[in-house]
Length: 392
Length: 139
Image 1 (spheres, chains in turn yellow, cyan):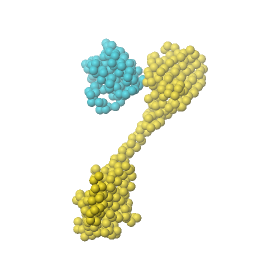
Image 2 (cartoon, rainbow over the protein chains, first blue to last red):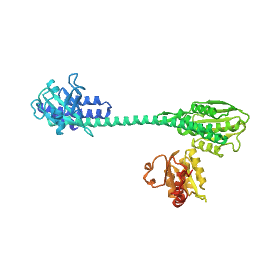
Image 3 (tube, rainbow over the protein chains, first blue to last red):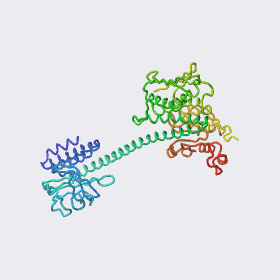
Image 4 (cartoon, each protein chain N blue to C red):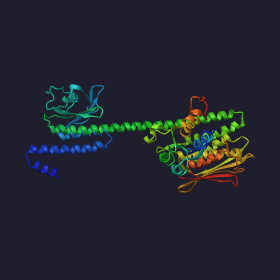
């Protein structure tokens, strides 16, 4: 393999060539390591620290740092780094523009290596570098997609020259870092958008619930006000259908972004509400509800609720001419994949013309059962009973 | 004069209450309703086997999107009206030229769209959708 050959030839050369070759190997390894980190992590601070650490190690020095550009203040913040006094990282800022080597690098748009910072006429040497006795430094730009993120700087207390390989290595690290920063930024924005959508969704759900409540109220008000029995009856039908949806949305909750309802709870609330607002005062009807806790999604619960509302309203109106009766609602599993909903009354039995709204009640129940993908059967020997079977 | 004059209209719609309403409106206009059908597989079968003069198709139905049904009908040169709660910009390019009824629609909008597409624009203009339209007329 070529690397092995290189290595053995390096071992055989003069000590300087040997150490150069080893440094190059080390730098390559550092870039490879950082590449893996850069695209795996979600932790920006850790990534910035790791970049400084590998930059310093790759050049054989004790100090390195990531300077984040704060464009509004025309300054850099020492955002991460290794080898600095405790109050430096995250706190100290240095001037941008030609007041620092980093600012100068950003200004001219290329890497800047300086062997003697104090003597260099291109820029001034910031206090924090002087305080730490820094003699030589390399600065490369961390280029973001939209604007530079900042500068990666490697600092040496021992005066030294930096080779083109050194500079290339640091620039390579900075480029990987820039791509990772962009990726994290996009991730964060996507998360924000997803969070906002979630909030909107709940808000919307809440509003649907409220709107249905208001609509139910409007209809019920009109119904009570009307002096005509026929108008009251017709509005009653409308109100019962809206009620089926109102109660459904009040019971609905989101499971993994899928709207679901406990069908048993839903039917319980719906039946009670319908009896309360539609049963005439002179009639007494017992509600006998027995059901298993079965979860169904919105697509199926809405038509099942509407069928139940049609059935109950029909029974209240027509099944109990002598003013007393019993309504029963049964929800159970037939086997592990099939559920059965049985609605029954002990009234006078289903007769032609029983239903409201121009005879469309039965037709509606039929259509709703199809929508719920349920098979429908009627039984009218003792009272009326309706059975819906559906897969769950 | 009944405007649809016995035309056979396939209705694909999976929301039962809406389906029943559409059916009643088309009957009022003198149409004969095939369906309403809310499941993709069954709608496809109807589109392939039953002679129809026009179709009103809800896009998002049980079992998927209605487009295969539209393909079959268009191949048979049956005029199609699409309907959905989303805007026409969501449609695949090849269906974007079709008459489009945005949900929620009221009775008059339904009648206009159906008459224009199935009975011809002249009749639609004269009967329901022209300038003579009296405000509040319709459903």
